[in-house]
Length: 107
Image (cartoon, rainbow, N blue to C red):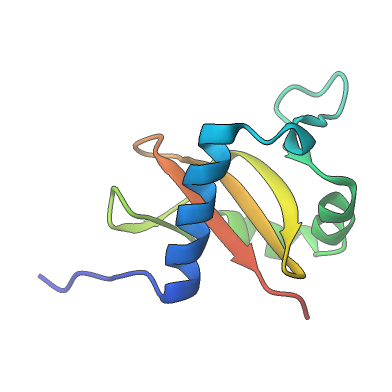
């Protein structure tokens, strides 16, 4: 069996995701009123996310490493923030509901 392992950046993002989930960072609690399923983002993160074409956003959401499942999955119930100039999405694995993260590097 050929197991995939996440790269160092993904591992760091997963560690950050766990820490954020534990602390429940208040700045990620800003949500769009009236749209419960819409993700929560800080203002700069929302601007960056919305600058990405919709088809690319969808591909990014469905290309997230889950350390528990040990394979690629889709991120759900995610929030976004800017960390070190990169967009960090933190959410749940669509399959096992474990914490997952996706780093989208600044261009």
